[in-house]
Length: 324
Image 1: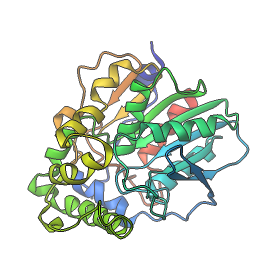
Image 2: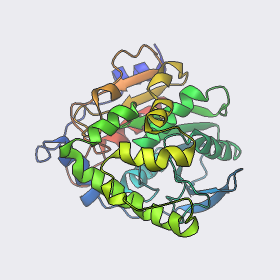
Image 3: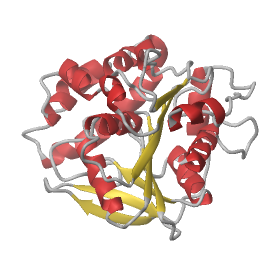
Image 4: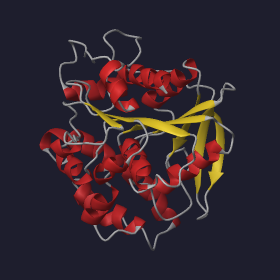
């Protein structure tokens, strides 16, 4: 039996949501609003990239020879509670942790007239290569939402080039089908999330406009209502895609799942308000990819039954690391 399938069958406990958080929306929002964790003693490294840009890496090192690399979600960063909690879990399990920030997410705007997107497997490869050069014997990847999609896209599409130390991955709340996810977030019940994303992205674009006034325009931004509008106007032209449809098609991890050759767990809650049915690849035949679909959990949520308890997502990763 493949390692991922064995973990799925034997080591991942069933998630039980708190009775007072009965919906996917509440399970999504609760950790964002109420989870508070002290910032760990990260050591910041600025990784220069071949194209002249940079990534900010936040290390949590304890002298271990194994490393967990954590990729955050859209408009996230290394200080988000779900990232901090996972970094602390890794150290407690005897691994070092590296929480990297996508371009422009580490606190400083990146240098080039572009943002970050689901196509950034090359950036993840730069982070993994940087880590492997430090001599780690095992590297596990953990990704949330967009970071999970980039992780699986990397493992399936770049499998002939990543370092031998990479041992597997656990990803949560993954928009495996970006077009379906964009449609899900365009629904009226998801308007509050969409407004938040668009407001946060506008703040980044305003900085870009000051540096590149001829390339970045914000007139009419208030008319953007969803990711189809945003990706057509900004993501696609900034990153070399014809339009939103071209971007979604080429950067969804769904077609690459069968090509993954390392043990990987894909964990998507059935009540995740961000995901469409197409983000749950139930017909997946690759034994190296274990699909786990808890009934509850929300998007990057999985809050514990009691205050102060370990989040279920961290427990799932702890079991995975132990199996590796």
